[in-house]
Amino acid sequence: MPDQTKVVRFEEIALPHLNAAYNLARWLVHDDNEAEDIVQESYLRAFKFFGGYYGGDSRSWLLTIVRNTCYTWLQQNRILRLAEPIDDKLDEVGVDESDPETLLLQSVDAQMVRQALQALPVEFREVVVLREMEDLSYKEIANVVDIPIGTVMSRLKRGRARLHALLTKRTGKEASIAVRRNA
Amino acid sequence: MRCDETPDLIHGYLDGELGLVKSMEVEKHLRDCDACTQTHEAIRSVQSAAGHNGVRFDPPANLEKRLRSALHRENEPERKSFVVRWRWIVALTSLLIVIVVGWSITANFIRSSESELLAQEIVSSHVRSLMADHLTDVPSSDQHTVKPWFDGKLDFSPPVKDLSQQGFRLNGGRLDYISHRPVAALVYQRRQHSINVFVWPATGAPIINESVFSTHGYNVIRWSNGGMAYWVVSDLNLDELRQFVQLLQEQSQTTS
Image (tube, rainbow over all chains, first blue to last red; front, side, top):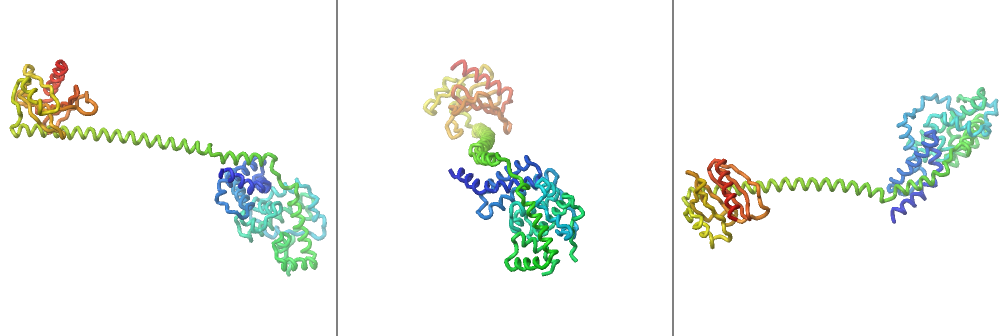
């Protein structure tokens, strides 16, 4: 039965990306059950359009569908807030040389990192998740988020800077939030 | 390499996005510049914090199973085709209703227009018989003279009744040609009004109910009875013509 082989082929291609799909959805909608539903909806949608998939980067293809489904959900639930204007200077990652403890972020616990990452505007959050957790290249991120590579780079830079700032703040090293102003 | 352009490069360097030459330039600069080294360490610490395994969310164990069954359910042809089939049934039923209603309307229209045409033909024949002074081939008021006259001239024997006592005198009979066949025409008279009664074997479903047409000042009444189709035409008023028709029907019932 050709229909049966279609499902099997789709499962072979799409199910290996289930962890990445769920992680992205969970980070974007911030809810376990919603993330599950969105992943299922995304997979069914992907299966529907599977006829239009002719090989290539199946992970980017699937993650694009997951991201779009998440954004639709966010818009429907009016949760989507665009990033507020940011002072670029504050988004440079830097450290105060006098306080080596700010480097010890490895020691902060995972829960704290989660809270800090969740506090990021969604535009920054998604590029950080795709880069740091899913190990996507700039080009792959650009494809999934549908933005130019230059925008990927600037969002990633800003996202990391904010995350660094939040984490140093939470580790009680407020005085050491290092903002390096390029001379 | 200048320090103010280095941070962007450090991100790219740590993300493995720089080519070999640029990477070596960055490494060389980091060896010489403490400030950029600090930045490098800060970015690396954010990377390792966010990339820590405990930070990402893993899907619940049953999600893959749930997805597989959802996919197979989606792929089941029965469910789909049931909906499709149901849609087809509705569509075909609607189409059938349209065809049946349309056909019956058209058929009615054609049938009635056929009758109208026949009525016109009857009237024309009646008028012609009066104009050409050829009202009768066998002038006789005796039904026993008129009826046998048709024998051998037609492939049927028309019922001939004398209604003189009721005020409708039989004047005689005539051969005529209506609707592409020879028919019997019986001629009656009421005062100065001639009445033509056309008779031929009925075809198709018997028309029990009378139909009445009025055209060009003539009244036409049709009915069928005992396998015969009757068309009566006259310039007599409709009430008296109806009375005549009723008498004719009663007579044929009592004798047959």
